[in-house]
Amino acid sequence: MPSCEIIAIGTELLLGEIQDTNTQYLARNLRDVGIDLYRTTMLGDNAERIAQTIQECMGRAEIIITTGGLGPTVDDPTRQAVAMAVGVPLEYREDLWLQIQDRFKRFGRLATENNRRQAYIPQGAQAVENLVGTAPAFIYDTGDRVIISLPGVPREMEYLMENVIFPFLKERYGLRGIIKALVLHASGIGESQVDELIGDLETLRNPTVGLLAKGGQIDIRITAKAESLEQANQLLHEYAILIRRRLGEAIFGQDTDTLESVVMTRAKSSALTLAVIECGLGDELSKRLKAAGLAECCIRTIESPCTEEELREHLRKLQAEQPVDIALAANLTPGQWQQDLLLIAAGPSETHTLQRSWGGPASMSITWSANTALDFLRRIITSEG
Image 1 (cartoon, rainbow, N blue to C red):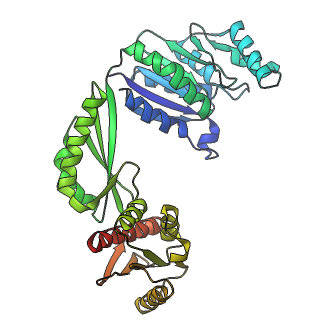
Image 2 (image 1 turned 90 degrees about the horizontal axis):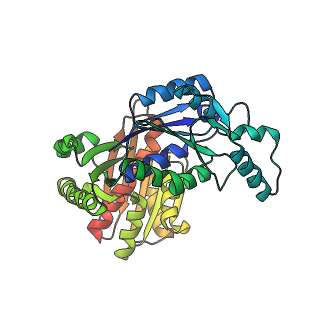
Image 3 (image 1 turned 135 degrees about the vertical axis):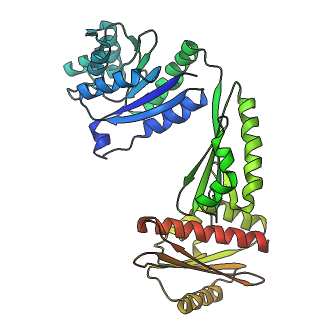
């Protein structure tokens, strides 16, 4: 399988003015067509640095994709940078200038003289017409390396990838394989515990298994390489079953599943009604459950943390105002070295209590608390249902 590196270009990216969604899109879609992504880089609008980075990438990967820097202004340096990297001059292409003028006419505007800069591409490059924007893209093929330069506007970049670049890459490299991933989500268990239970799988070459801790949630990514989608799916299915067996009820879903969506789905399937009250969590828990379908009348938010006695009193008032099958009260108390979470859930058969402490970054404590509370609620619904 060929390897690829991505270079996202734009000083506005480095300044944090906009987010780089192009790299995420490319990473997922390159994976799906069987291209290994080795590295991604973000650079400002500096032709010399971009050219140097392209040359470095050419020493490691067969495919280099740049996004951004193809506009009409003097600070759009990608065309010049690619020409410098491969040692050729820029050449003016009259056909590209005519395409640019035609595109502006369709948009009800006139191309200005600085737009003529977009008609210059590295000598010997293959121009790629941009049917949804004004900036032409191009492909420079050295014989053993391919440099693909695309606009930074996400809609334009995605259109060109899907309609021109992916077909080109499939033919150029005879791509028949596929890389596909599946993500299992676990909660109520630590990363080290997960690693202890499935550590042997993390050493596999195909499929590969990796962990990502996200504050009260562990993601287990399984990535399979195969000659066909069916074979990839079979590999993913086999190892997903194995991991589910080892981690048991800690696994709450996969891919797009969230803790709040699983909680609401299980509650509805068991015909259980829910209400929540949170103290000191902002409105993180309530916001997520509300987005998943919990009625606003079943939600109470108190900004400040409280004592256990006060929390139980809040819970009693909530149950009196809103009779439900399961009422959850959550309280997060900040400390100098750790954050303490108290959870109390009154169910049909008994009252459940859980105390946990968070010693990680304080900025993650609310996310961790909400995930811990939702997992607590998920397990109670399972036992009560």
